Length: 54
Image (tube, rainbow, N blue to C red; front, top):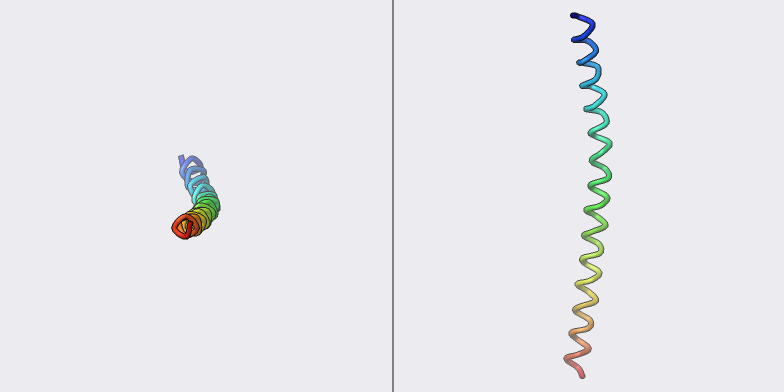
């Protein structure tokens, strides 16, 4: 019984450590999405400016 508790506790610690590494992928994806959104907003602004001139 004690072996099972130690095994489950060890598994929980390993999964906790793995979960911290998984967050980096999400943060990178969010950063890429934000950068892409800003680029599109700049492009749209420039196009509107050109259309207004025409």
